[in-house]
Image 1 (spheres, rainbow, N blue to C red):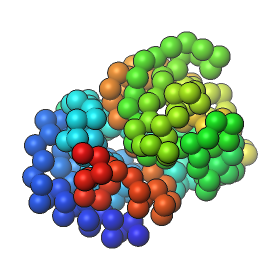
Image 2: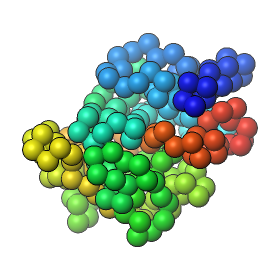
Image 3: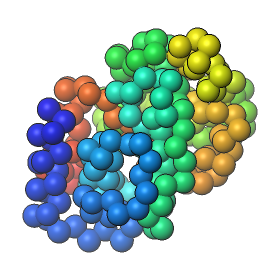
Length: 221
């Protein structure tokens, strides 16, 4: 499924010859860390689609989270789209309702404590019960568009660490938020806030088929 969808995306990008000022084409020439090239390409395609559709305006960063990887692996990458550089490669938690070490269930429902998939835009930072945090607005109806009302935010958490991953065999889990290590939370938030994109991926056939930002991008217009 993933390979076929990537081929569709690549053909669509080539045919449309999109001219987005910040988001590069289907080939990433800069450093990319351990991210799957197919997942990175899909995130870039979603970002280009959002920009082409006027949903976002010249996003400066793209954060990709690959929930097909276990929580003990680094599965969050923050890319600078202007400088074509990799800024962070980090651990990130998923929701309690999504699974233990592997996230297998996803939801847009309040109270589910599950992670949401899809494309988000970063909004304003604030200081709350989890410290310095960053609000996210979901861009996919029925998939993640309740992120703000669910308080799905990026924040630091003591249960996200390499030591905990080794001793427990998984990270601690949030109530659906992509929580990161406390040591890097403020740096990430300040770098991506105010209009950056976040692309949360998993091998979920229903979402892959229905996302308006994947495939030929027509649904996002």
